[in-house]
Length: 80
Image (tube, rainbow, N blue to C red; front, side, top):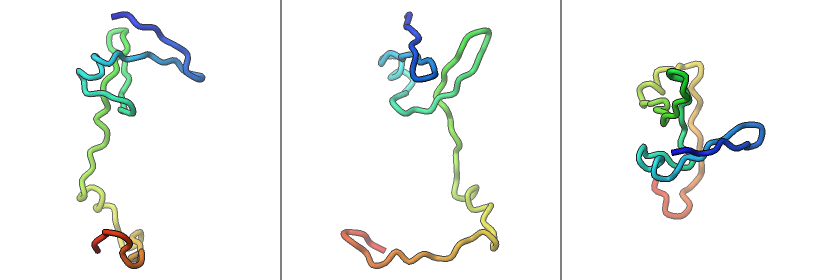
């Protein structure tokens, strides 16, 4: 399929046809990685950073931990 590169602000943009986007589960706002392979531009959905509670907590120390914050009484249907 042939498509056209168009100006978008100071950058260039390529429209991705809906069937192509659906096939690789890509939608509006999907982060992608751009790379070059054999002289061709390759666009792939970004894997992003996979975070776990353990990886987030391993950098918490006595020096950087903050105190508990009181947000007041529940409002609406919140349960604390």
